Image 1 (cartoon, rainbow, N blue to C red):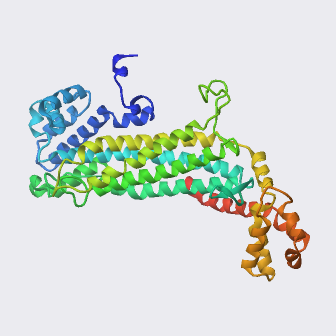
Image 2 (cartoon, rainbow, N blue to C red):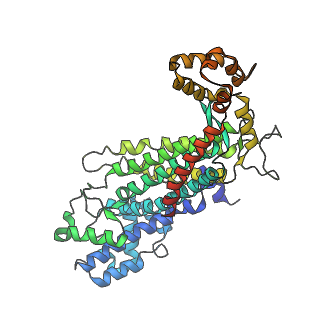
Image 3 (cartoon, helix red, strand yellow):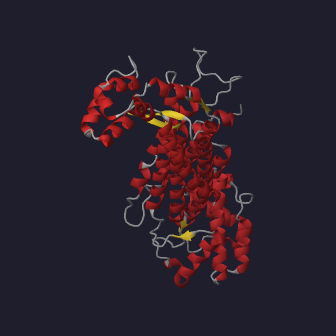
Length: 455
């Protein structure tokens, strides 16, 4: 192990997160985006006659991380204790005599917030792809198990039967809602500014509006319509709270897998590499839902990261620096971890082992008790008061799992026999009716998802 690797202390640097997403937030990538903004500013000002055209060309040529290196910027930052001044001075050095025009009329946040918008634009594309992949994995399961009977559970107890496919369709629909939210919020979040010290653009004089429009057009983003020295931090808070929502869904789905994989339920199981993977250092038989547990743990951290951006909305007048340090931590960490949990969940559901027989056995184990709703509604329809029907069935199911089945008890009960034939009881306690309804609804959900995923 190299000395540099041994010095790493943040788990995101070596344990969590995909390398390709980690690179989005690397020092070189961030420097490159800042240089891109500086080059766009110089080019726009040249178009407007504010900067000599040859100077703008020199600045654009110099604005690369090969010429303005991370090492040089960091050396200047240690001396100046100002990160943007370090960038502009290094760029000016690289641009030679034309360096006098670097950063002309701009303030630091014009560069950093516009570069941040580019960063969030790239991250948004990654997260959208993640959500699409997870929704598709869930949709495959929904389609394959649209008619697979499973006991629905409420409060951890048997409810009424559903299908496992419908459970997956519900999850896919939830994931797609997050994708829609992302599509709606990104235009509000991916905004930059080139408006000077307090957002009025006064430093650019009569060209203020044209400078901002030109820079944003070159960068391919929109401008904050009413910035102060910084873009509105309600935008960042909206994004991180959206990430918290996604994390909530991720933990919900991971918890479902964890519960259904419990030994006493065992209806599904995460993929497990029997050749190499180890579940426990002590108990060799273990096949733990480690990925889902990992997702649960990281999802809780993502939600915790949503709080600082809410507090960052409160600035002293037109600007303070209280948001700056925590955003450097919150944004890359929460985005990297959200990508991480979505990719892991996609792997879990793409390789999920579904025990159809175990699900069917659990439906049978309820001995008809999970279908009291059907009997209650039928008795009410035939003439018995609903409250009386409810109390009757509560009495008939007071000791579930012991003694005769609900069908046998119902057929023997004189009140039930007054209103229903034995064949009616058998029909009403057939889980196929519930699964049929679940299958049809699964199909309707999937039809909407298929259209949206194909668009």
